Image 1 (cartoon, rainbow, N blue to C red):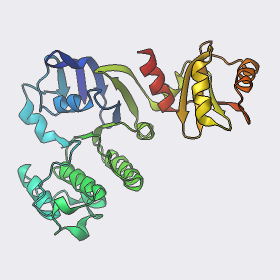
Image 2 (image 1 turned 90 degrees about the horizontal axis):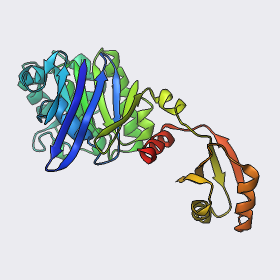
Image 3 (image 1 turned 120 degrees about the vertical axis):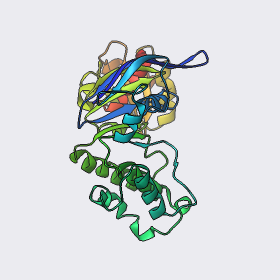
Image 4 (image 1 turned 90 degrees about the vertical axis):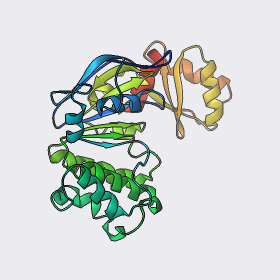
Length: 301
């Protein structure tokens, strides 16, 4: 469905994307994961034919994004990272406008957006600029879907949205996927990455890995431990000074810890921490999450 082949894009002397290769299969919910500045937005603008690559090719359902951009825009629904609908038009006016642009009507494709639009339909006469973050998100998604696209491209759609709206949004994406629509979505949130069929880790314009979420977790190369003590912040500092430490990262009220040897010497580590004055020391082995895996890839890259 989407073939991204050796894509390179530069701004001045800076590589926003450097020889990126990804293939997204038909009907897949594919996630591109990475921090701000990784190149996600540039990649999505290239896929939607809004930018031209410096090198490489992108094929979307058989169409080249440079030569066949008009055809591509008919089959793609795009939701950019920033809310880009008309603030001075009402909810209903925005939806009808986008339907008209694509030569269709709201009534013709209402069944596809019903579950989403029903949340905001009671406010159909409200100006789009006056909506809450979650409601803007639902309106933008409705407008991206109203022409029944074959591919939906979403650039960080839940950034700045509350946790409840984020959960609702991903439930909507799963229903949209069940309609046979291929979804390409970017996110900085690791919990959202686990909801994708496959994910690509993007860092500084380069792909670090492409795999299923569980496959990425299974590839984690070390034993991972959760460490807790009475003074968690002192524990962070002392672990950074410990000669055996490979990684020591604060996750809420515990530290996710690995050693250089890939396995841990409990006795030696406990003695070191006790010598540093720590009390109520707990060391337990845990299974890595996708965020642990991503941070390990970043460290090794």
